Length: 513
Image (cartoon, rainbow, N blue to C red; front, top):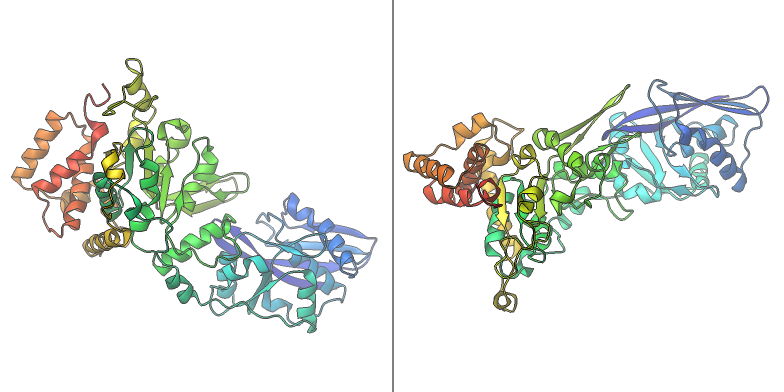
């Protein structure tokens, strides 16, 4: 008997419907899985057989051929266990077949028949609705994630017995209901940390406010214990809230990577990713034998924080250069290519030297001559060229630490950032691919960041006197445009330029001795 059930395969952050065809009958007991399956799919027959027997069902003792169509697309992972098991039971007349064609069925089987969670439930649910399926049956742990898709019945099940009972009409299942908009707005901007918790460091807070307002990448340079990590972790709290489209796109990436918990339905706050400096190139950018999103894609629409930047492998940092420009990662293999979005703010931190106390107001640097420059040279010029703000972080003194004066809350800073972003959206209204000043090309910088004669004179003197490099020119203009937007000014004034010049520490000749 020939029976069809339906599953789905995820490539990048998109899904493709897969038809599972099972023919049971004739010949000696033998199992064949065809249609370009990987090892995990081939092993599913052992899991299926044991799960059926454990739950009192019968595994047909005849020739069974399982075809996964389209046959030219590689099928990976264990999520097809439930799809294959239901098809085999239907082919052996243990499950009614009338409703099978209306549902996508996915789930990994344990040997006792219970279901393990799968990856990519959200993109699968979106594709199921697009292809006109009535519902989606999947493990209970993934139900809330898939249920944010409207006009699709989502059933979270705990075991294969629930699925068999559902199709045979003996076990009613209750669909998972999630109010997407309510879920989204209830937890919007719900951050655990706040800028009001930071004592002192007003100049650093100002720099991060500018970075958030213009979407600029930033590097924090200072001694150990100065507060670089603490400040960076609070940056998402002053970024504009995610809109629903950004939340869905971010959730899809985390769904594909298997990073959503059973309680999560939607990512509603901007991600903050902080990989360790021992991370590999593939883990940072994405890829692998079975391509998966890396840290820079998991930070999409949020912040990627690289602590102790010079300690990262140079090759790992260099592979970030193209994604920083294109805001997308393309992973190519012999038979397919997948894209992962990676539009993130890069925040890096570093000590100024190996001992950490170069330029420290109180402690003396013990590094030998030339060591500071050698340490800084671990960061390549092309990567540094993509970082707009260089911020020197100094330690907080005792009087500031012990002060009872209340610091400004993230909510108030965020309101200013949102107003500045609205100005930029209006400025780039005819360019939907541009959302912030940091994304402007050199040509657009010339058009949107015009300065008067006094401004040109100041910039010329700064470049000559401070020894600023040519690459700093566009960066200064972009940052000064953001500072002007924060101030509500249509024109870039001298004070805006002066503040932007202040944030180019690493471009100054002689900064590192």
